[in-house]
Structures are given as structure tokens and as C-alpha cells.
Amino acid sequence: MNPALNQRTGLSFALPRWTHSIAWFWIWVCAIGLALMVHLAFLVAWPDHFIHEDSAAYLIQAESILKGQYLEDTMKRPYGLAIFLVLLSKLFGPNILVFVVAQHLLSIGTALFVAGILRFAGAPRFFALLAFCLAALHGRIVHYDNTIGAETISNFLVSLAAFIAAGAAFRKWPALPAAAAVGLTLGAVMTCRSAAVGQAAIILLWLVAVLDGRLLRRLGVLALAGFFASAVYLTPTAINLAIGKRPAGNETLAVMAFVVGYSGDFEHGVHLDRKAQARGYVEQMRAADTPQGWPDIGVYQWPFGAMHRLAKTGDSDTDLERVVRDIFIETLTTPSTLYRHLTKHFLREMYFLLFDANSVARRTPSPQGYEFFMDRDRFPFFGSPTGLKSGQLVHDYYKPWGPLSRLLPTADQFQLNLNRLFARGYAPSSDLVALCCGLQVSTEYDDFPGLIWWLSSATLGLALVLLIGVPASHAGLVRWPTGHLVAGGTLMILLALVSAAFPTFLIYGLNRYAYYAIPFLAGSSGILGSVLFDRLRARARA
Image (cartoon, rainbow, N blue to C red; front, side, top):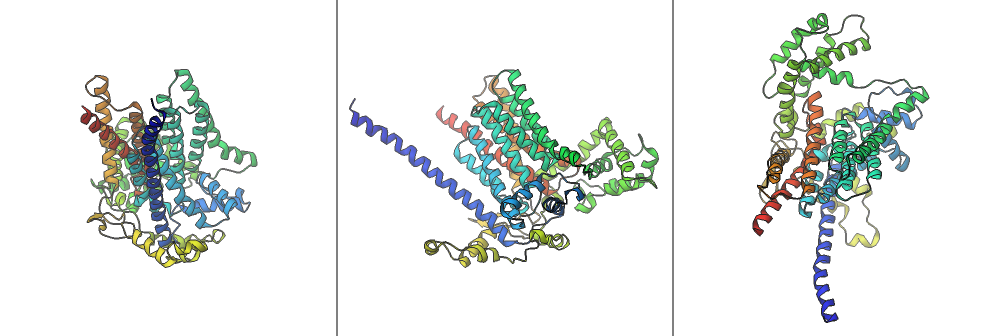
């Protein structure tokens, strides 16, 4: 064969591959740039609304550590987020703007990890890009990234652990180092949010199920990951014991109160004398329940009133916690009350949360409402309130380097572009707003079901496809996509459902809890698109 002809032929085949890779590189650059712009638009539109009802606990913990007053801290939250804020303070200074910017960047990282899992599972680039955009640009995600809370870092660490597990399962990364990394990451996330134990269990069990090798090797991977996760999770407790710090308690009592109030049996069982004190109130509130739940968060929290009615004169906090714990255990171990909790409360709240099916789950509070918390919980140590006005961040910090100033927009032009982007469904509005091409979308602040309705429908559709398609493929009735795609879809479905199931089982379907499920709902949507695309391509070839 002529060498010159062979060289030209090789170049003709290599050139499309290079152009294809370069094109996709710039597509991803544009997608990430768009996500950064959306998050920045939200940041500059609300530059001083970084505190919600739970933020103070984490900031107080971080401030006490930085000031050397750790022993005097009496908050009841896990220390993971506080340690993260302390680390940021040591690196960049104790500034609340630093914290919020870090949260926005971590959120985009979460979306990238979800897209990476899809690529590891064999999904085409387009569907990985779709999952990234759905996870990074969802209005509810951007909204809560702009307030200090455990949501952002928890999702980031869960997605990181799932990414490492997928790399070990699909790309044959070394199993033992991957197991150690997964364990360390899951231990870190549980120090930020104890309810992440459900997501941690899903990732570990999924890794053991799909990892190649003998059963003993897979159990060794599980044991190693579990050891590192436990070691990290117990480290704050060990430090407290070593330095003599007394535990400040936790939110266990509050969580148990919801289950007891919603589904406990106040006619039979333990502590009947105490139950008699609360029976009338409980029956009254349960009678006011409707198929659409209660009208607002305040009414949803009525079980706190039932809990206090269980107390007797002279009871300490420990006595009341013991009583509530006894009734809580009774509720979950009695078939009738457990059935009531699952059917009357849990399934309904899951539906509310995943499909924006009632006003409490659907409507995200406007950032303007956080002014109350900003004024109530002031942290001058972190520069909060910042005193910044809308758009001032751009004018104060956007200063392009000399030669680039002729190519890049001015501060006024840049702010105008952010304002236009912010108006595409992110600004508070009581009605649908125009996105583009005549399409109208929910703003997350109106009273219409938003994008999560479609993401949840796609996730349940994928679950149905897998439940039918996998057995049919084993029976030889249909040709099924690669096992990696099935395994990746299973991981996304399980993470999405357990992320929503834990809070709805223990409390209720508040819209903020949907934050934990949205990235994995987006991943499931991408997997569903990949499966359908694979089937259409197979049919076209046939």
C-alpha cells in the first residue's frame, strides 16, 4: 500500500475526531459559563439575603471555632458545614460572600459529577450535557445555593462519592483506593447532614452489587468504605470527648415529634396518661387534614404542640425526650400505626414533594423574605449584613485587565446582561414568565408546578422502563442497552428517591428538601433519554 495514501487516509479519519472533540469542548465551556452566569445573576440580584431560618446555627458554630470558644457552643447541628466554613475562613478570610460564592461553585461541581456518572455509564455526550444543565440551572437549586445551609455541600459530597463509586465500577479504578475515597467522602457528608445516611447506604450497596470480582472482595470493599466513613463521622464526637466538651444535643426530639403527632396511637399503648393530655388536640388537628395537606408550614408543624402537651409538671428535657422516643418506637413497630404513617403521610408527602402537588412543597419563599433573618441574625464577624445593593458587586469587583477591557463588556453592560438572564424565570414573580421562543416557565415563586414535575416523571418513567425491560431482555424478548447504562440509571433513581424519602418520612415535603433530589432526578432524566435513544438507534439499524 502506498504510505502517502495511507497517511492521508489516516488524517482524513483523525480530523473529524479532533474537530468533534474540540466542538464538544467548547460546548461544555459554554454550558458551564451559562451556569456560572445564572448563579452570578442570582448572587448580584440578592447580595445580602444569605441567611435563612437555619443558617445562624452553622455560622455560630464556625464563629465559635474561629474565636477559640468551641467549648461554649450550644448549637444542635452537625459540625461538618461549620468546619467547611472555618476552612474557607482560613484560606480566604471570614467573609459571608466567600461562603456563598463557594456554595455556588460546589453546586456546579455537583452537576458536573452527575454528568460524569452518565458518561461513565455510557450515555452519549448530549444526554450528559442535558443532565448537567437540568441540575445546574434549576431555579430551586440556585435559590438555596444563595443561602448558608447544609444543602449545597451535602449534595456535592454525595455526588462526589457516587462519581468515585461509578469510576470504580465502570472504569475499573483500583477498588481499595476508591473504597477508601468513597468512605471518607460519605463520612464527611454525614458530618454535614445526618439524614445523608440513606444516600450513603445506597452508594455503598450499589458499589458492592455492581463491582466486578468475587463476593469476598466486594465485601472487603464495603468493609473498608464503611470503616473510613465511620471514622470520619465519629471524629467530632471523639474530639469532644478528648477535650471534655459536653454534647449539646441534637434534633432527634423534634424529628420524632412529627412522626408521633402525625401517626402515633393516642388511644392505646405506652404512656396513656400522657397521651390523654394531648389526645383532644391531636384529634382536632388530624380532623383538619385534607387530601392537599395543611395550608402552610406553620400548620404543618402542629406536632410540636402535641409534644409539649405530653409533658407533665416537673419534667426535664430528658424526661420528655424519653416519652417521645417511646411513642416514636411504638409508632414504627406497630403494624397499624406504621401503615397509617406510610399511606396517610409518607406517600402523600412524597407525591407533594416530587410533583409540586401542594402549595407548601411548590412555592419557594421569595429571597425578599430573608430580610427578616438577615436583620435578626447579624454576624459582623463574617461581614453580614454586607450592606451591598443589587448590582453593586459587579461595579465594585468587575474590573477587566487593561487589554481585555476593549473586548469585554463594561460593568454597566455586564450588569444589564445579568439582569436579562435573571428575568428568564429566576426573578420572583406570581405568574409564569417568558423564557424564549414563546415558551413560558414557572419562576419557583409562583403557584404553578415547576420543572421538577417533569424531572420526577422522567425518573419514574425510567424506573418503569428498567423494571419491564431488564426481565424482558433476560428472557430474550428485547435487546437491552449496556449493563452500565442500567446500573447508572438504577443509582440515579435510588439516590433521587431516598433523598426525598428520608425527610418526607420523618417530617414533611417542604420544597427545600427537593434540593437534595433534583441533581439525581436530572441524572435519571438523562439516562432515560439515553435508553430511548439507544432503542431508536437499534430499531433504525434493524
